[in-house]
Amino acid sequence: PLLTAQNYWMLQGERGDIAFRFHRYLENNHMIGRVTVCDINKEMLRVGEDRAKKAGLSGKIEWVEGDAERLAFPEESFTAYTIAFGIRNVTRIHEALLEAKRVLCPGGRFLCLEFSHVDNPLLKKIYDEYSFQVIPAMGQIVSGDWRSYQYLVESIRQFPDQETFA
Image (cartoon, rainbow, N blue to C red; front, side):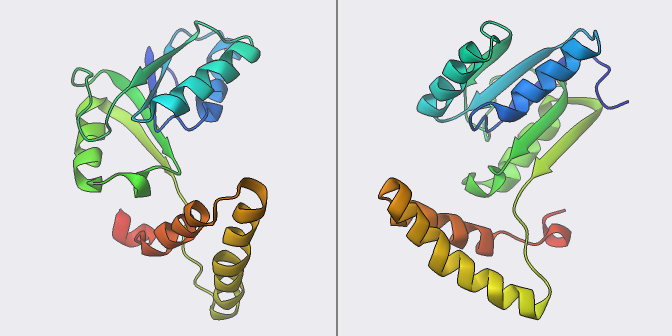
């Protein structure tokens, strides 16, 4: 099974959603382990910690400020390393992947959840229109921030497809 060893780790903590699921999985299956969220963004960690408190998980998840390219964890210290919608935001992806490999135990799992490209030409045209016209406009309406949502769709476009990334 995927989650049977003692340590678990999640990088690019976003707001802790995946960390909460890992923790609940451990609890529900009477497993011993720890969940550590590491993110370079101190404010994002604070948001995650606040959400954890509201969810009754205060003190059950470790929150660490750190850089994916230079992790402050010993070698082979985690059995699972997840990164959700964050690898394309890392400055030097290759270095971050080497660090992930370094901190994973032999046989550990690297789990990367990321946006992907659309291959079907018709769907691609629709997706591109939606991505470049609707998403930034919605970002402007909801948060007053066109540029961040424009960056989102551009970063998805520039990220390699699954085969190239692997």
